[in-house]
Image (cartoon, rainbow, N blue to C red):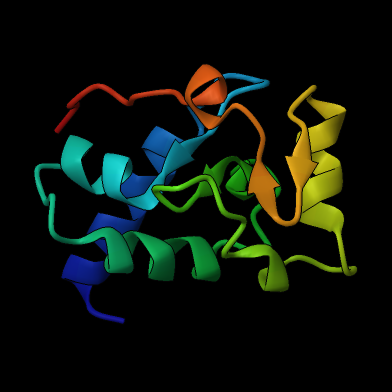
Length: 110
């Protein structure tokens, strides 16, 4: 990775660490908060790269429709869903039920 990519990933992790317990946000919302609204995919790459960082609650980041698109990056078949359900978020068919209720909009911070 380049220094620029490392810096972007670090900023993503700062935002993800702020997601409150029982809330989720999207790749696009994080990108928008970083001033890079068209970089949702790069946020996804950052999330893929943080699977060994326990302090980053990656399970709270989903796609713009509330789908658990990153679940295959978690150990076990349903770990992402289990982590969300442990926080009181219901998931059916890999999608968050009442997504708008659980959605957290990150503030622009950079």
